[in-house]
Amino acid sequence: MTGAMGLSTHLGLRIADATREARITAIRDSAEHSRAIDAFKERIADVRNVSDLMEDRDLYVFVMKAFDLENQIFGKAMIRKVLESDPTKPDALVRRLTDPRFLELHKGLGFGPDGKGNDSVSDKTWQDSIVARYVERQFIDGQATQSEGVANVLEFRQNAPRINTWFDVLKDPVMAQFMRTALGLPEASVRLDIDRQAALFDRKFDLEKLQDPKERTRLERLYTIITDARDTSRIGRNAAVQIMSGVINSAAGEGRFVPITLDIAAIGTLPRHPYR
Image 1 (cartoon, helix red, strand yellow):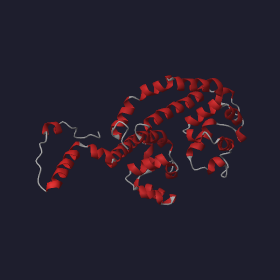
Image 2 (cartoon, one colour):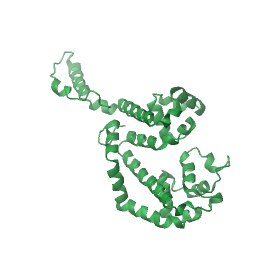
Image 3 (cartoon, one colour):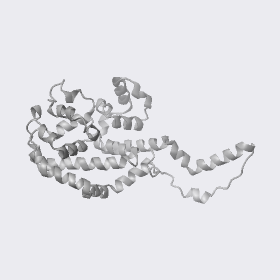
Image 4 (tube, helix red, strand yellow):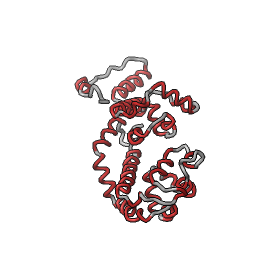
């Protein structure tokens, strides 16, 4: 998808990478987010059980945003049950939910049986890790308003190291869409049952390679190239396509050849490898 400013996914990603540190700093320093971060650090150490977290609206919202669950903030009853679940039991709610973010939330907050006891909350390193997740989520969400493709690559970077099976990929809609695109699989494959989808992915790619940073970079490049190639709105803005469309449209009315003048020097200045 082309960004709001008309940039390709490839160029948008390069800009996001180049400006990342400045944007991260801007998020941390903004009035809204700095207040939220300060409140989290000041009060999270007092949380000893799930009830303590739920009763502090600011803390609850903060951790939900940090784990990319902002759209689930309203479901406090379900979130309580998730956090009070015992993930060692196969029938626990946190295990039955297919969305991996809920298990990530449970593990990240570290409450004990029945949602009681939490020694992590007093650990500054743990607090900093949750703040880092929160800031990173704000950064990715900010990119998503400009380019869905760029945001998807950033999600891929964040999640790829934690992937162990193709079912881990298929449980995450963004990861599944990223891998389908990068591997050139048809979107129609989503209609297959999950076992057949996993087998299809497995035939196309050795999942162990996902732990190789160079391989992840290669997949990112494939994703951006294919995403931009599929973007018909960008094709319409291509100078050569516009010229030829004008010729065809003009000639169509009178059935004759219409001569045009091309500035070869200007065309020659275009990069030979725009995706490098």
